[in-house]
Image (cartoon, rainbow, N blue to C red; front, side):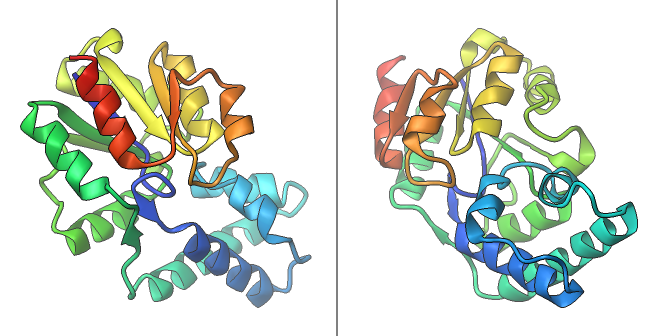
Length: 214
C-alpha cells in the first residue's frame, strides 16, 4: 500500500512560519494588508496559485515580486527548523516497517522541500515526492497520478493524507481515498465536506488506521 502525505500542516508544523513570511512580504511591498486567516486558507496551493488567490487584481509583476519576497522571508525564517507534529516520526517508521510505500505531494517548491528533507535527514526516506512547481498545483490530481505511475501502484491501493481542502479535493479528483488531519490549516467541519474516510487528531491514529486495513 502507498501512503501519500502532504507536507506543511500535516507532517511539519509550519503554518505560523508560512503566514509570518507572507505577512512580511506583503508589508515589504506595501500591498493592502490581510488578516492571517485568508493566508492560512491558501496553504497547500502552489505559491503562484496562492498569491493569485490572495491578490487577484494585482498585476502579474506585483504578484511575482510578492512570490520572490515570500520565498526570501521564508528561507530566512527557516534557519530555525520547523517542528514535526507529535507522532510523525514513530508513525512513519511503523508504516515503513510494515513495508508500506511512502510519498509526499506538496505545494512547496522542489528547492524548499529538498532543503527541509535534508535538514531532517530524510532525503532518502520517501519512495517518491512531487512538488507543485514541477507538475500542477493542488487540487489538480496530476501529482497523485504521477506518483502512482512512478511507484506502479493502483489508485485503490493508495491513500492521501492532508490538512486542507486542496489535499482532499486532489485525492477526490484522482479517485483516491483520503484522510484528513484536524490540527492543520483547515477546520474539521470544512474538511468533512470533501469526504475523507476518516479525520484523525494525532498522527498515531493514522498509523493505527492504515495498519488496521492490512
